[in-house]
Amino acid sequence: MELRKYLSTAPMLPSLPKTPAQAAKALSQIGRWCGRQPYYYSVAQHSVFVAQHVYRATHSKQLARAAMVHDLCETVIGDLPEPIKNCIEWYQELEEAVDRAVIGTTCLPIHDGNVVDADTAIKGRERNWINGSGAPVFVGPHEAKTMWMLAWEDYDGKLTW
Image 1: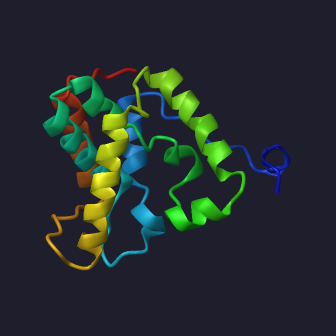
Image 2: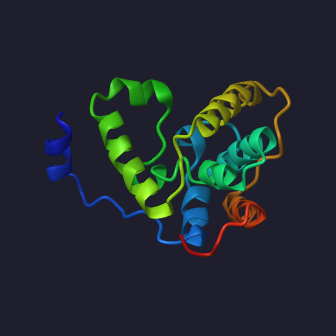
């Protein structure tokens, strides 16, 4: 289906979170891989791991904050596994449109090479975690929201965009 036709017939898409606190709550309530794992693992916790990786590599708090919101589009369109995303012709166009709104709202470089590399590295670790190898402690939505907000503050994030 063509993107324009989908958007004209789809129910109203939710708007982006208006504050970091709203982002933390929304990201903590979205399970990675559509919740298809034996434990709860949220997009918020994933984002914190990506931010930690970026910060260790760059010592840039701005890039760490960008990593914290690199999947913010998923608060609007959800999190789909990569193979499914790749099968839906118009999905990438939709994701890019929402990402442009994320960049415009947060003024953070979510597509910076360091953020992309860190996301790829964490995805590799996640594949191992699924198989039980070196998995961290996974937390529920409330704890993931708190974890995200504490990391945001550690990277000098403000309470507004």
